[in-house]
Amino acid sequence: MKGQTIIKNAKIVNEGKIVEGDILIENAIIKEINTSISVKSADMTVIDAEGNYVLPGMIDDQVHFREPGLTHKANIETESKAALAGGITSFIEMPNTNPQTTTVEKLEDKFSIAAKSSHANYSFMFGGTNDNLDEILKVNPKTVAGLKLFLGSSTGDMLVDDPAVLERIFSSTDMVISVHCEDEATIRTNLAKYKAEYGDDIPMEKHPIIRSEEACYLSSSKAIELAKKTGARLHVFHLSTGKETNLFSNKIPLKDKKITAEVCIHHLWFSDEDYAQKGSHIKWNPAVKTSKDRDQLWEALLDDRIDVIATDHAPHTLEEKNNPYTSAPSGGPLVQHALVALLEKHHQGKITIEKIVEKACHNPAILFDVEKRGYIKEGYYADLVIADLNSPWTVNKENILYKCGWSPFEGNTFKSRITHTFVNGQLAYNNFKVLDVKAGQRLTFNR
Ligand SMILES: O=C1C[C@@H](C(=O)O)NC(=O)N1
Image (cartoon, rainbow, N blue to C red; front, side):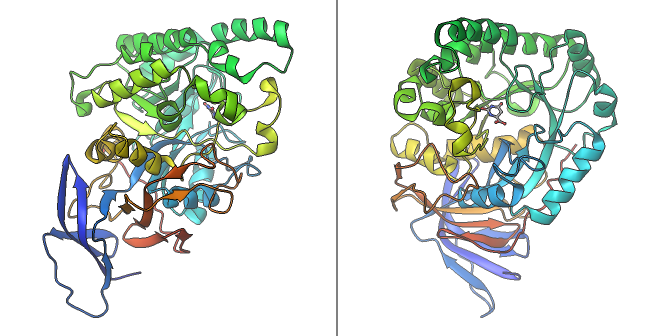
């Protein structure tokens, strides 16, 4: 769909306001936003959004799309399509692929794969290890979203556990350092205890006790301490405990913060009460914790100690997930259902749509200095999502788009659906159908 498109009669959600009006898209860009824009030529595509909301496309700052090397679980093409169906128009993908994204050459390889196959806009995190400081220093921070460090082990064997190396990395890179925080020694001690009791078939309910609150708090505290000492720009991924939320401030505007935090959909939705029914399908690292933790995460999100909502979309096959505890990998697919899950929380009175847009669209753009995305503004890229808040649908095997073919939300009915997703001005998703336009572009940064 080249040329001009008008979205008419929309409730436009942007920068804390909802305004009724029309949006004119010309090629990739939002040309005009006005109360009423007239259709001047028969060539214009007109979409009537009467009664529906138009949001900026979500920018998901943490996904695992498994390419290269783990493509039996997922690939950039399949998961970027699922992302569009969920209203995510830009993603930042993680380095724990095979090979890992730990050299500049491997990073360039990933950019080439995405250029050929991504349906959504993309960038990557470079991966740090105990011995790749020379490669980290070769990365031009203007060209990539940031640096990812696993300070607790998870899928992909990328633990960075040498304190001297960590201090060197924190002191020497200008990239946003995004960290997975779980204290490895604490996890190992707890795991050994439960293995002695149960062998490999540890009950899933023990996951948040093994990957405990203390493991998270200790690791997050240490990372923050190091960032304060070195002046590094730190972003703590996927907070899962109430205790950690107290490590973050809401007294500074996001653009001036040196230490920021993210929360993920699964930690906002599930609690330890769900392990009995969902088992390994809600096994994530960090673990889903108690309902009290979940409440405290919501509180910190709404009072701005937590800056960003993401998915940590991390698909594994059902066969892998159905293994006993010690060999069932952590992670699950989420990009297709994140926004409708948040809109469900809006229906429940938990969060306003304006706040969803702030945390899932505006703030990732501010935090990573993403150029001309994350807002509905004239001159910005037309990455737009139309959401019908009163059109219930149920997640099932037939409508799941993930390559792994399952979802922790299976059987769940959501009141809202995404009806249209535009990427760079092109209609790329329309009512349960991903269109074959492949309009994704490489994200650029204002740095
Ligand atoms: O940190 C991570 C990694 C992810 C994966 O499977 O890649 N799965 C998780 O649960 N947490």
